[in-house]
Image (cartoon, rainbow over all chains, first blue to last red; front, side, top):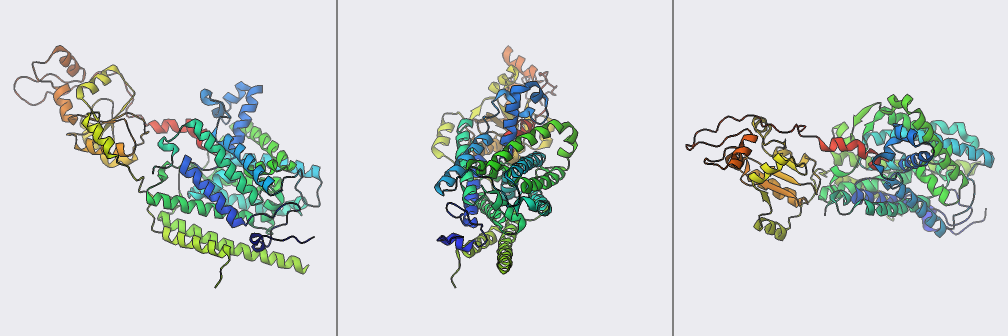
Length: 189
Length: 199
Length: 203
């Protein structure tokens, strides 16, 4: 691998896999501080934390309402997203997730890290990887819907305000991932 | 200064959506900065090669937590007005395990999958479609799993409340645990790097 | 000893964490007393409502305000103005009040009501009012108007279960429960609002 001049931050982040194109990643602690300040801003300005999974539930409720509106209204989980007549996509989380997309794109463009690609290990095909990604997304959705949040909402935001359920959730996310990782070596290594 | 500003009526719902977008930009920006638009980097956490997930997440938690604590101490932030999800410990325990599994299977969590899709990852896109499917499945199966969904209901609980410890003490403990964890993470990464070099 | 950036961050975190041990996070917000505004309100007498006004609101069945009884629960149990909620002044901080909600406060004489008014105004409640003269004035003007009282005052008094006083200042007649439209006792407003907002604030 050709050597590339390393910015000071990455020299300390010894284990970071090199990006094949574009700049190296930011010092994780600095990125964490940045993320933490964004989260703090959410607390101070809105009185709430970040999130993601709720936006997808709203989107699903909205999409499904075109095909089976009566079912959505009667569904105990999706129904509340259509309550009150307000457009389900006119929700804080939905706008926030659109922002996430925008911010990530911005950062990626600045660092020349936007590239059409499939992230995978050497021993699996792209098709296989895409299938796993789909399945993983499905699993994750079930987990997040059960837990009332995902890593951004529950773990990060709830964690920062010492919410009990969030900490339990966070521990279990790490636990579940470590338990399953050995079984999935083929996908990643 | 009265914060949270929104809860003190400083601005309305419409403006809050613009705030949401702005905050989201910051969120997505730092996710990508940290490399979390890449499934391989994220998953390295769980093969103990690259513990950036742990470092970023807990640094963010510590930063926000200290910020909230100091602002509340100064009387500039009304902590009681900051939303906390109620605890359903059984549902959240199971949900966490399932989400963790989904993390390694899919390679992302919802926020990072959006960052991935934004930077061109097709697997991120596939993941998002999977999220939609999973949500549909969950909604469809809701009557059957309702019991689990509401299991372990405890209302809003905090760690200091449950442990009967002063808030600040728990904050300090979390900081110590995180910093200790960072030192441990660095050690683990060096060991892994060293063993890889020897091979 | 030169520390790396990461080590410095870690040290800063530990230092801030150690100091945080002494944090009191329940102090609540720093309140802002805008002297000029407050004095202007007081001078214009826009800080209180008269007992007769409140009586009219109750009879009309208006629901656009909350009436808070700042006395202890025992006193509340013995008698309270119909539609009033029991919020002993010690528990004022815990009462969930929206900043633009119209709130009328009363106590026996009015001192607690005035204090609570100051606190609510400082918290940003622009529509806070005291009942002028407190419960004492309510009894004197509404429940037991001095005779000879005009027919309207008598009707109002009767509505609330009172009666005009005789010429002599005898003990107040016993109160009967007023025949008001059934109002559910001190509705827990935020509890009802919580499920509807569930999706809005969740993750």
